[in-house]
Length: 396
Image (tube, rainbow, N blue to C red):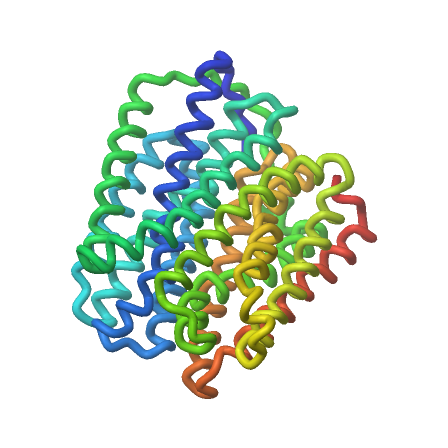
């Protein structure tokens, strides 16, 4: 892959960063909104937990699979690729709102998943190539801020819309916003001209032969498995098993998202100083430990009373995603887009299996305990693998 650097003025660099951050806010409303709307969708569409998890897994897997392609397409065709995928994303989201059964829901989420590949990988590439090297880690951290604000806002706004206008209206509003961004990126394609400087070409074979690529990717896979299980079922778990009212449970998701901003910014800056491997290991281990308290809260009133605080603590360590992305430049500085795309595919495998297996565990056992225990273990595996990676060669 050819690394391209965009020579832009300071004001344009800021504009690109703000545009990418705000777009990620909208793009991730689908991902986080699904879990918040899930209790109402299960009731209306008469879904099983396996069906609900499988449909979401399909969305996440197609997002991850096509992210490998969208990154390459961005390198070749630029911002117009993002614009086209925004339109696809909008169409899929409209279909989700029109769903009358599981099959219509799965189709809508599949199309939306394809379109959602316009989000993380192209945005990381766009911002990385638009800003100087010394600002790239901080820029990726800012992108995560947009995602975390989306996470936090979802639990506050989505329930209000769902309870007043219905859950279908939520999807249609998001679809409208995605359509607007498609137009914005299309306009950007015509009016913003980038000066590109080519660097060394890196082939897939060179990346795939790297041990560090696979070790960090494996850690990313296990971290994502634990994360997607929580994203998908947290509101349903809090409402159905812990006994917390729907609106309050949704607000806890918002809290998790907002405090994640602290983690995204603080850990991104800290990882530049003490090493990305060290910070990722600490975050994954503490996230694993925090989930243990969710399990105990089912039958322990004392822990249940502190569940809001526990959720906030988990949210801080949930902000580890941009640090994994920053590792791409450490492994292959000339192939950031390729590496991020391939790691996104690995996380897509987690996205395919985690919600489906989690839903199956709930349907079989009638409880979220085993699913939460699985998330604890996968977070711990992710931390152990990063320790092994750091012993192989220091990441940063």
